[in-house]
Length: 243
Image (cartoon, rainbow, N blue to C red):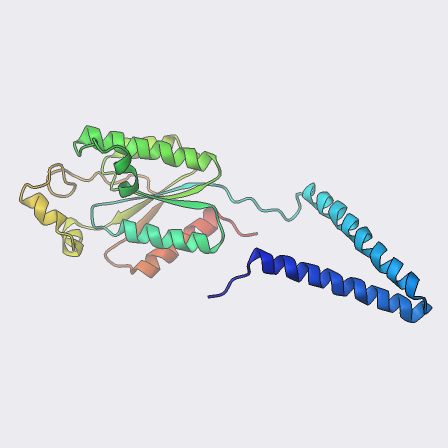
């Protein structure tokens, strides 16, 4: 894959301006036959057009017509362990990056190392999710789109994250414990059933499904590509509205 470096772009701009000036000088010489006049007009054109471009650019900066502002938002993926939320969040994140949007990706594995003493009791998990919600809200307020994926099994902490965000979009991975367990390549469910894990959603605690998720993904029926398209289509229709 090739891309345009800044040096190449600068050289192209200089070469274009040089050839344009030479062309102007040649045209003046053809019509007047005066070499000195052709050179003078060519040099005058360089500075005149630079000045005109500067004022033209500053004028358009003051005109709002045609400008499009993409609002920042928090796209929060929640669901049972092994529901596929991490892979789907990563896929949506890549799609948003293709559109050159200012977007960041957050996962529980990114936040937990910041608070290594955090356990997995309901109170600790709620505090962890609230901290993650604060981080997402801070990024959102600074104009960053946040794609976050957390099991976040308890409604109160998810609702807290929603309450402190200006534009919170919840994506619920609708699936079953049995389906998640069949997808669990790391064997977390098996360890939980053996008692190696405590407070494991879907095994010894109940995952609290959202009441008002903006997007519900049928994780057992849709492919990763179809789920990604479902979410991207929703965003383009309701949030990133193309004009």
